[in-house]
Length: 344
Image (tube, rainbow, N blue to C red):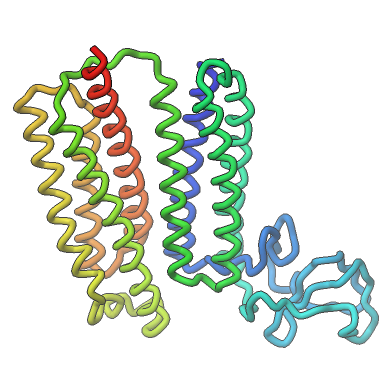
């Protein structure tokens, strides 16, 4: 039971990170409204591939809930019907959650894959929660957290719907990202507390404090990064997707805070690395932190000085999410060492 539970938890964590990557690609390509309705896509479970599939046709069968684009509006079939030679408004109702009515097959399928990965992650997490029932007598916390994950995925899905209905309101996108990190933290915590291998660590309270500080700064940086991204999205609306040199023209205060804090992030983590090395403490995963942090800084510099090369934005985001996950695991390790020291 325990072995399978951890395998499912690892698969869940990988899938959640894939959803984060897919979400970053959606934002990079501007595909967030590729599916203007939710949870279906233009009223389909499998979205259309051609604009002609969303045109009104005479003498054609439509299913209830199916969407067409007519006069720059989304029209939804009220019931199963077969059209006549003339469009009958009584058979259709205008989609009122927003007025976005465009179709781009690339955007549609990029957004659809994002949703598909989210649904798959939710399904695997449900399996994880069911398998956690076996822990109930031994450790009720494992079962409770597993089912909290199911609720969190459901809430995340609802947030995804509100993002669509708001036509990609920036604040809601930021909340959506923070919720994804919360789900990552829950999965990392489950993997940590179900790991029965003994920790061979030297007690050092300063390291634990340092890990907490580093994690807090990373989380703050991610939130600031989403604020910068909101500014960039606004610039894209003003100058267009092709004029990348203008995306950071007269940047907001959040950009300068984000850039300045990156120096603090580097200093804190390098100082921690030096301290761990000097004290000969066995926190091997911290090497991953330094490696990811290096790539994160490089990707940020590349975006700024080379006008957002292809894939630099999603890479920057996924590196930040990975950094958060590893730092959270290190916090758990250091905290467990402290507790073990106090009870010994």
